[in-house]
Length: 186
Image 1 (spheres, one colour):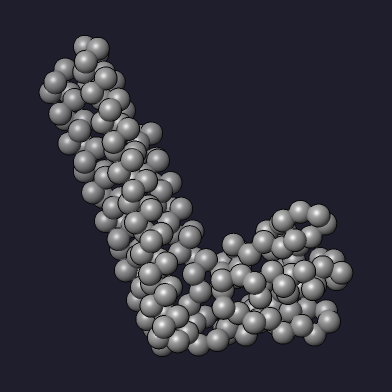
Image 2 (cartoon, one colour):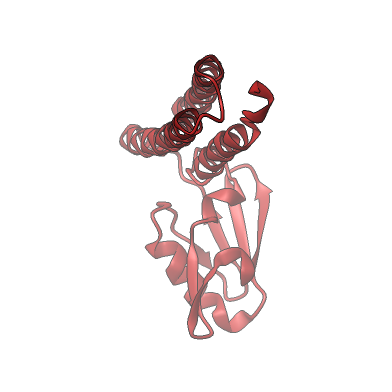
């Protein structure tokens, strides 16, 4: 009967939690120019809030410089304001056609702040993984109560589920370690 217990959905959800954490990490800036640091910037344009990348092209002409070229030159000021007001700590330079975003060296204080943010993101990911485990455990318990699976099958599936949980929490932790060391690079 244990073939009824399919944990692929649970594993897929855990994998999604890991990917979400990695995507969030890419929005934290390090000392290098990376267009992903602008992913959370939203621009007030055409009467609504839109992601920056839907109103402009983002380029990386050199390792410590980003350029933002608006599709509509009239939105340049709005884009500049959105970047300046974001939490990236970047001050755009406007030449009338494009914005140049010099990526400043991170101060020790800023590095620690970004590490704190990354740790919060990682914790959210761990909580998501544990929530998947909890929900799946509840489902297994229900199946056992309804007599659809045996106690042995329930225990075996719980063991597998705990193994998956440990595996994905470790992957989140190692992604966090990578991000922290990237942030501490000078």
